[in-house]
Image 1 (tube, rainbow, N blue to C red):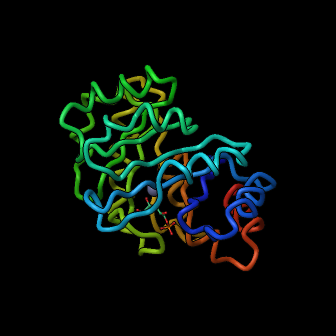
Image 2 (cartoon, rainbow, N blue to C red):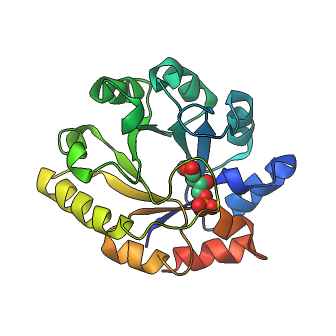
Length: 215
Ligand code: DX5
Ligand code: ZN
């Protein structure tokens, strides 16, 4: 049974409290919160006031995914805004090891997000310091994109790396997750499934979350 983390990016921002309460009542485990700066990715999502507003209503952990350059500048601000998990992109960090220590020092779990083109071999020397790998299964920037099939191969390699290191790091899959690929992702080694469009565009989001949780 995977951890299910619906992505707020696909929520109705004019009815954010309603959508937060729907997630509270549902089988969802975490709230996935996407932060985009228009530089690291070609899109801008939302910032601290919105994260704080979500935190006010959420009764489940906030899993914050930073798609921003130089994330060190904002680690404390995200801790103050209520992040429980904070993931930074390996491609955006010059000193990733130090960044992960900063995140933990602020009392959060430390995540490393990995773009589709970044080889798993680059994670070898950071695995012992990482609580969560956010493996991108689309190019980050937008919800509702098509799942990249090569992700399965990367999960296998990452699982092997984690097991060999004796690490407890979780593997999260982010992008294009739906009812067609969720079972295979879990069978391959995924621990956490993010789902945006699949949940929020469904006629019954609560039942859709329940169906992912039941796999
Ligand atoms: C993409 C984001 C994802 C996105 C997933 O850049 O990191 O979290 O919200 O949305 P879906 O599930 O619609 O691909
Ligand atoms: Zn994300």
